[in-house]
Length: 147
Image 1 (cartoon, rainbow, N blue to C red):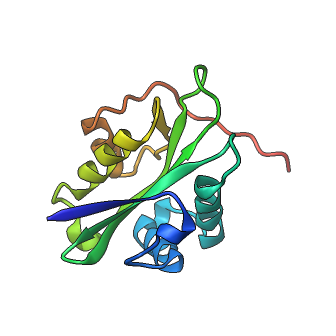
Image 2 (image 1 turned 180 degrees about the horizontal axis):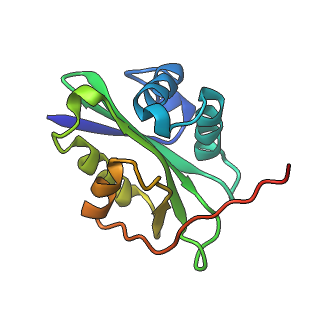
Image 3 (image 1 turned 60 degrees about the vertical axis):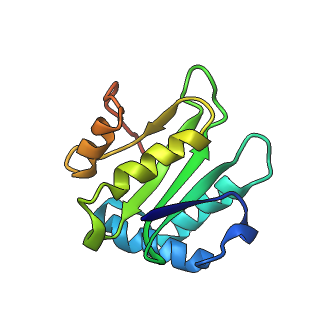
């Protein structure tokens, strides 16, 4: 049975360490992920006590093994932008196709106050999972970087 634990503070890392959690996301997000320092910053933001920041993490265990992880950040922009952004979600490749990803994402909805958005690359196979749990593609994200 899949056990999903919510983590809102540094002290709540019990079965795994923060480093193991970050390593898991880095490994299992593969080419769709970010460098470890960026994942760490995302956790800092989620655990922040600043009222305009915050969020939470979820750690999913199957047979006492970490098989899934998620980080949700608050956007601080209620109304015109969804209140939450699902920044990272990953499932160990050995456990994909068993419904764990859907369960983790659905569990995150129970803890997020307000609407949730996410960014997903068009060729990411997880896009189908997001559509199955109710996400809709409303916009194409475009970025500009000063060089």
